[in-house]
Amino acid sequence: MVCAWLNKRCEPATQVDGGAMVSYVSESTPAPTTAPALTLDYALLGQWIGFADVQRHTMDVLRVEIERTSTLVEDSTLDLSRRFQDLAISAREQSEHVNLIVGMARFIEIDGNKVPLDELVNSMQTIINEMISNIINLSKNAMTMVYLLDDVQKDVGDLEKYISDIDAINRQTNFLALNATIEANRAGDAGRTFAVVASEVRNLSKNTGDLATRMRSKVTAVVKGVRDGHAILREIANTDMSPQMLAKDQVDKTMECLVNQTNHFQTVLEGTSASSEEMAGVISRMVTGMQFQDLAKQRLEHVADSMTIVTAGLEDLVSRTRATIPEGVDVPFPQEWLDGLLSRFTLSDMRQRFVRRLLMEGTALDEHGILDTVHEESQDGGGDVELF
Amino acid sequence: MDYTIATKDHEAQVLMTGRLTFNDHAKLRALIKEMLQNASKRQVLDLSALEFVDSAGIGMLLIAREELSNLDKQFVLRKATGQVKRVLTVAQLGKLITIED
Image 1 (cartoon, each protein chain N blue to C red):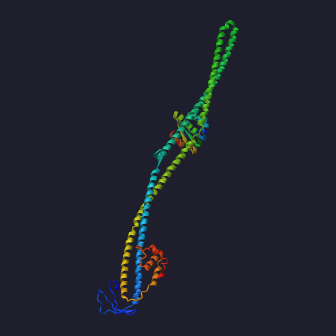
Image 2 (tube, rainbow over the protein chains, first blue to last red):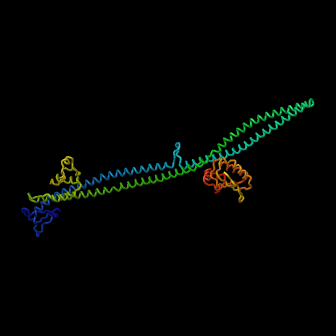
Image 3 (cartoon, rainbow over the protein chains, first blue to last red):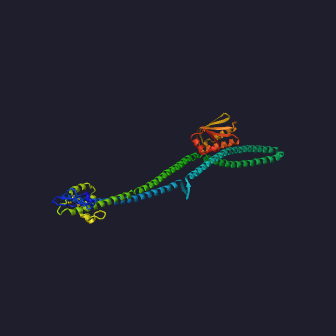
């Protein structure tokens, strides 16, 4: 039969019911005179035609399945490519956003000005150092004042004592003047002039006493002022500022942690940005890699084309064989073979398409080999091979 | 606060103990007077046994330094520990007074 397929013709020489003797005849080469006699088995030919018919349809269905699969792969691949491209764009956007954050991490915005973090830390440390320096100067000046007021207080105490001394002297002067007056009166006329002097001394003593009293009053006021001032100053000097000074340690540590943490964030974010960029690159390469689908499609097209040619050849051979055998020769349906084939179709939709194709010679299928709706509705049980 | 003075190797060594606060201002004034009258050119304040100093104490140490400096005497703070050392460091007293470990 293979020779006939290759544009050779097998013609029956004689015909016998159920079986025949044929002589081999070729179109291109004359039959050799010594050609062996060939017995033509019509039953076998009928069986072959039935088998070849189903095979032809099978081939056709498989070709459609290949084309269908190729289209499915193409659609899915294009869809995947688009999604991957979107993913690559997202990854690049993410990288840009992260870079933006990295750029901002080193700065802090104060009143609309972008101040570098390290500059801010330095400026705060300068402020704190100045503050501590002021505290120390204040403490030193306060203590100097305390020592000065200690001295003043001592001096004022001396002053009070001196006024008391003046009072004592004055009392004695007054007493002496009084005695002098008595003695002058006792002396009579001779003592009159002396009595005037003694009286003047008493007046002087009284004036001195008055002055001492006024001085004591003022000195008392000064002493009170100095003591009050001293007490306030002691209170000021006694306010311990060392905890505030030591707070610098905590501020420095906090600042250092802040800077370290920011640097850490920056490093992590830079890593994230690099990862996103790398991810975008990998995804782009994946999209490029998915061009394998083009190659697969071309190969499948070649396979489908070859199957078309094989099917056409088979169809031609079947029709020529059919024309050769007499009417009434049984063309049995290869049910057993078909059952064996169908049992391998585990995908139900593919199985249904195959059955439909065999049943209706493909009339229920569109150009993609897919069942149309009308036939789909009437195809209940279409997958049941028992329909044959 | 209490103190003792010993003269060793041409320097007066003052060992200060306890807590130096505002309440010790009279005592510190007496110490300054002693240091001024002392013949040694180098007056060393040993702070190893001093537990605490307040801001008034720092002010008094600066007064001492100033008074000694007026008489061309060197004032040195030595072996500060704990809170005292931290306060001296934070106050950057090393810029004004010689500080030794």
